[in-house]
Length: 443
Image 1 (cartoon, rainbow, N blue to C red):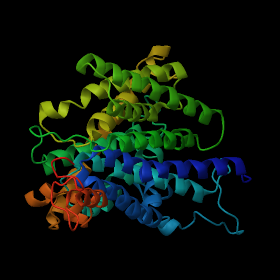
Image 2: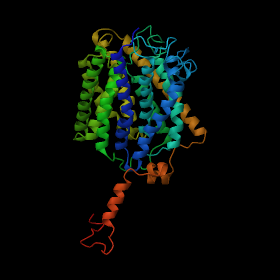
Image 3: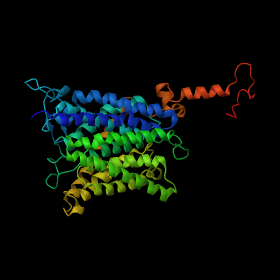
Image 4: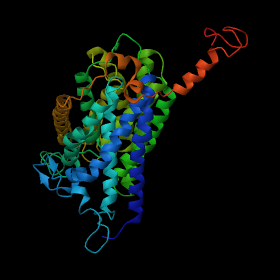
């Protein structure tokens, strides 16, 4: 197999796009949705998880996901390619290539970014009330016990792949991460939101996004980066990558329309937050299906995902769990919608194309296994972090002043606040409230 420079360039670009999805895209999206006193803490969760996972992926994450000898269909042996042994140079001094002519080390780069974004997604469910130290303890545990095994089970030839438990029924379809990324992260977010508890004042005090322009900017960058996520999952620059690109675009457009329609009917107005959330819902929904649907089928999937997620985000108030930034309503629900609708809409195996129930049955079974596995592993990680004395919750005082000050001794808008105070405090030689210096009431 000769080196395919075009495919290699495409995969390097795709890896860079997926990394952009976490930093800065998700950091901006979540940061804008947070309260002003916790925006830096929210962004730091994305930065911190990126730093940890980048190291762990090289040490053993790749081996556990793809490079290691299979262990019971659940994970790869972390020692097989420990420290990326065997992934770089062959005996002739040439880079080891995969079956498409792309260096394996490029595949490592691409898959690393998937692990990073998956863990970072969870943080939105526990915003405004979680200690940074607890989060940084949770990240290596969860990526090791939940993400790496799930990636192996679905994409690494394990139990949920085309060679696994349900292969005799139909080959499971998860093109770019409906189960591995979104259901996995969504269940983790749901468990932590319930286990850690609600923010003080949840349901009785307004907790609105503090900076919607940041959120909309983050959503736009997520959309841009998602082309690496989905089209890059074709693993080469070919027609399937082009199909995934188009499907990703039209599903996202349709999801925005679906979300805004629900808002208009339910609330009487369409919002910028709804548009930004609809973008993410569409991207999440099409992720498992991007290479298996027609563009028309993708529009249908996007409309359903946008509308269903718009309804789902309100369930936290009905059931009383505090999913701060709608990780459950968008990622868990959107991942389930996309994973299940593949069984109806897949052009080569879907029920609506006359291919029977087999694909739908397999998609539901895989989703259920992913839910149970992620739930058990997340509970174990939460227990370990609690056991080692790393408390999860901010104190009442710390939550009142905000995670930025309490955890990082910083403030996102300190200079702005200082500047505003300078306009209300009297300058030397002028009395408060004079015509030269505006009073606090006037400013």
